[in-house]
Image (tube, rainbow, N blue to C red; front, side, top):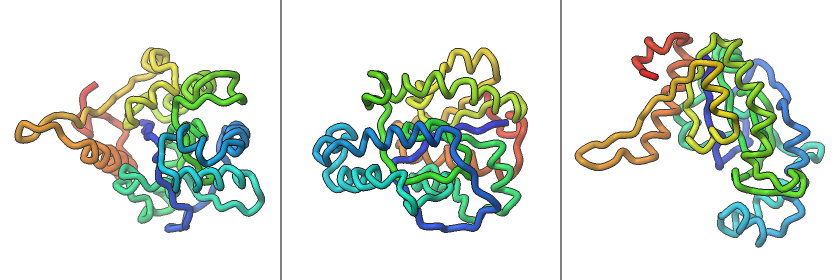
Length: 232
């Protein structure tokens, strides 16, 4: 079984665990070209493009300006992202065997890097799916990545047993030709939505459930959906 998660907007590149090895992102060159384009915008422009506040815009302008510079801090993706999903995944206590298993059974969809393995070392960045850059010939990040990521995802799912447990947010499906993915492999998308006491379950709780489910699958080496009591 292969797990698909979304990258997080919040990142911390301070090492918090020892990993058995590190790898380079498959689309590192594309990420560097995107970063170069983003570095050409002012903080004010990035504030609008990324729909964020001035402080975050300035932080990410600096990140992009030094993205490919020697010595620019980087960290393994599974540790670099610090959003709620990754806090609940809590890879800081993974064993070397856990990290190795995750490397074969977890993938992270990213607007900036496209498609990541857990132990791919990445730099800090922030990106949105609807951003259009000169480098992408007028295509949004969704469109730019779709033709590049679909085949690798399908290949990785087949290599991991032919079942994809989709724990990514719904918008991340737009990074892939999702109809093709569903035609070629079995896709299971757990539904954590619903209501409690007549009120919708908060989004933060859904994100927590995604991270905890990913952790459970990796820690328990789950290969069959039946063992998760999930339905298609």
